[in-house]
Image (cartoon, rainbow, N blue to C red):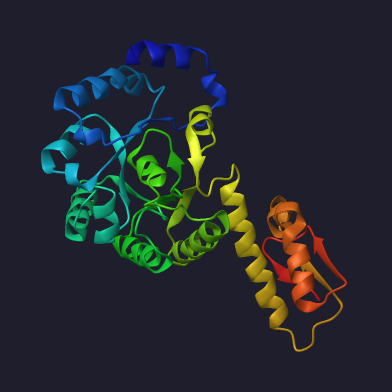
Amino acid sequence: MLKETLRTHLEGLDLNRLPERRELAFFGGSFTGIPLERQKYLLSSVQPWILSGQIQSIRVSTHALFIDDDRLSLLAENHVETVELGIQSTDHEVLELVGRECPFDVIQSAVRKIRERGFRLGLQLMPGLPGDSEQKFQKSVKDVIELRPNFVRIYPTLVIKNTGLFDMYQDRTYTPWSLERMIEAVKEAVIQFEKAGIAVIRVGLHPDKSLLENYVDGPFHPAFRYLVDSRIAREQMIKMIRGLKQVPLSVTFKVPSRKVSVYLGHKKENISVIKNIFGLDSIILQQDADHLELVA
């Protein structure tokens, strides 16, 4: 089945118009936690396309509890380049409430083994789980920074049908975070990761058909990353204006042309909020800079 799917998919693509490096990913569960023979079958099914050069590498998503030398050897032998760990949180109480108990030293050990074998490392966080708080989430962010992954993904916790979290939601033992609360928490995390030089390659869930059909409640927005980036941009502009000795009635910012919408904010919210804070008549954005500049 997998070979037929790959063949059909690749035959329908113009490889000359695709990126030079193409990667196949096994997501949606703990890959190294499935039966060994199944892992071998899935990995071996991809090898003909690896050898032909149509696919250059493989990435897998898994859990720290399913990392050991034998599992990593199998991945290395089959051209797996990147291993992502869905750690969700480093807080023991949060992990216990969602049935994913995993001591931090186990995560540290898994990370060390992955790095020793030369894999690229990705870590995934899920703010807003049962028992979570802004303080606990930021501690998880700090812990992840200390682990020095190549990149991170941040998935806001949503209530999805037919899940344990859905049962807790129906029993009223779990209340999801609001969109505003999640934006603020993730904004702080993105700032800290960027300061540490760690790429945040995904923020928010992709709004595919399955998600939209099963979504029940929680801080979902189809452009969640945009909302977070816009909030960060707003705070940068506010900080610059506050640094002025005297605030004029009109200010001008130079911004990168590709980021104008980020600085404007959703429905130009950034402009209206900043004008209200400082009593400004106007805020002008000029599209001729490599980075944000204030030319009041």
